[in-house]
Length: 203
Image (tube, rainbow, N blue to C red; front, top):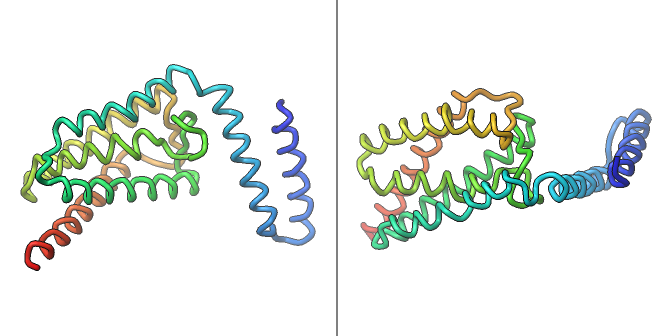
């Protein structure tokens, strides 16, 4: 066990002993616990993730979709696409953080060690995939059915594959939850984006 791991264990034992007496953990103790967790995550990443084949795959997935987006995105609609893409990115990051905090899933590998989310997916793969879907399927009907297909691919093909390959660990989650979440969230974001630009066009 590393020195950090030993320190982490000793600190937690002290925390548990104090909790048994006081029945609560102070804000300072929580902050220290988070600091140790972050240090442990960085140590693990440097030892087991950085430079591994999983890290190189995630780095490629972090960069390559932006090249695809640059070539395929309609530059005349750039403000609208950027707004929709940023909303997808923010919602994806938020939901991913929530799922991690609730122990619904975890990610053993990532491009960088600081964040618990899967950076390549949250910042590139999902936002760009849904933004291109938004661009190429402009009507509600065509967008909905395209969204059903792409959500099905992500939920029932991509997620099981990345789980099998060790990028993603399902704890208390089902793939069909992801399917519903992809569709509901993206439909809502499309509605918001269209409202913004309809108001802008009328003004």
